[in-house]
Image 1 (cartoon, protein in one colour):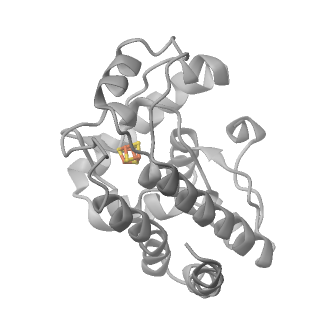
Image 2 (image 1 turned 30 degrees about the vertical axis):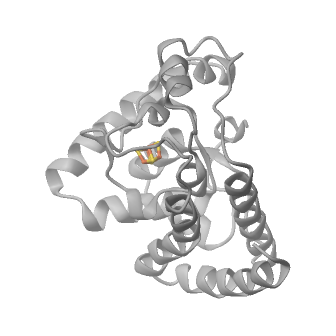
Length: 221
Ligand code: SF4
């Protein structure tokens, strides 16, 4: 994005964040505002190898902003069937407990399927995080290899510089908006954060007051 576009997006996101503090629908709309730009940009790039039904990358550790975890929680509660909610919540707690017993390095080298992945598709797609929305690959063979050998961190997933740059700009805007709102801005591990919100929905009140919602252990990058 050009400088004037970044400034316009900053103002737009600041307004959207303040609305999001008042309504769960507006919080989901904030996620959509952030991720739609990335999605549209990626759809115009034929070099990207990502296709529907491929979800190899939905097994890796994902770090999200607290408000992104809250948006996913509200989306699951409002948009998914009761049966899906039960399945996701059970998987979230199981996976969160498994991750809590690992070091960050162990999690980085272990495939842990995302609990929101249903039939190889993201069930919270409209409310997914910037980290998920911007992740992509120009070589699916590398993704398969990485999935098969998660302990081997020597190979890297090739990505497009312009998409990575846009993602970084949007993440930077999020940090600035959180600072403007005097809100806690530490990213947290997604599965543990969502599991914690399901176990204790009153944590959302902390987010609304700009306070840290989660224990330090979720904040490791
Ligand atoms: S939230 Fe969606 S896109 Fe992100 S890891 Fe989970 S299933 Fe994949």
